[in-house]
Length: 220
Image 1 (cartoon, one colour):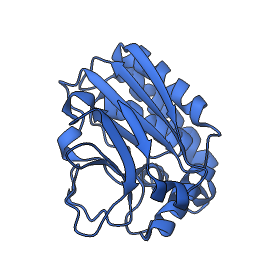
Image 2 (image 1 turned 90 degrees about the vertical axis):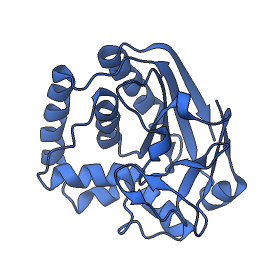
Image 3 (image 1 turned 180 degrees about the horizontal axis):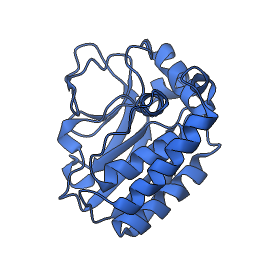
Image 4 (image 1 turned 30 degrees about the vertical axis):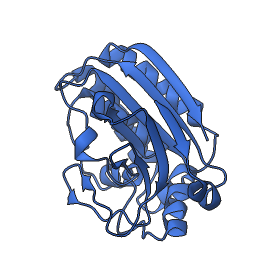
């Protein structure tokens, strides 16, 4: 899969960089050992941050600023990385979905990135382009129904949008039958921290999802 960053994204966020991870995986409904890690990190996170202070986390702050530059209110349409962090800081447990989604969420709260997770077999074509959502552009967010993505960064395949920082699309979502994972870590704050987050993601995928044939793709 080739990823193209559009000129409109480069103008709005010259420092943008991303890392994609492709792997053959085995998904499961639930992984107790993974949830032990999630619970341990949740406890640590609640001791370190507050709902107010996370806005100063560089990765969260940069994604919020990108929304503002593109014309979207990040407090109304929260990027997923921030939304997950706010959830646990309000004392609400993370959603338990399945092992792939759960481990992606762990990476997201640990590093503050909004991370897209896709079933690669559901993509149309072999190119993803990162652009900005247009007025009236059709988009069905996972569990959200029709989502207004005007002014949001959006990855599009040959058919249309598949991922925004707020929500990925129903069409390409992960499920228990997913064999080929494609996940994207979005660095609106730049390159710093991306490799560390990607390496942590790969370690979780190997440990909890039997990941093989792992490929790491850096792009900007």
